[in-house]
Length: 148
Image (cartoon, rainbow, N blue to C red; front, side, top):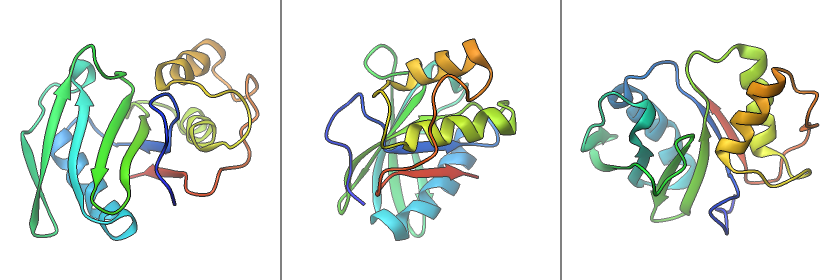
């Protein structure tokens, strides 16, 4: 797996089950630590998270959590790792239906098709409500869909 080279490109998707960021980030980092190396920092946009912790405990180490308002796409999470570098994941809202989430995970991980920002992907899915607007059946090596 290799991290993304640009800020528009997504490295995959994350489908948290709630808006409890403390719980959801700990679970995400717990899964990704063995795959990507120790996650050291996480950044989110504050628009959709009612409470943002300053740090979380994961596998015996502390991960710092930051937030942005206008500087970061509200539908994206940024993860930093000593080993893998920077990873940008589409955040699929917890209330998203399973078919829509599956489409978004595939689209965020696709190696073909247009390179869309996280917000553009969310807008395309919301406008269409189906996967017909973009065929996203194959993933680029290194991209992941993380549904927890």
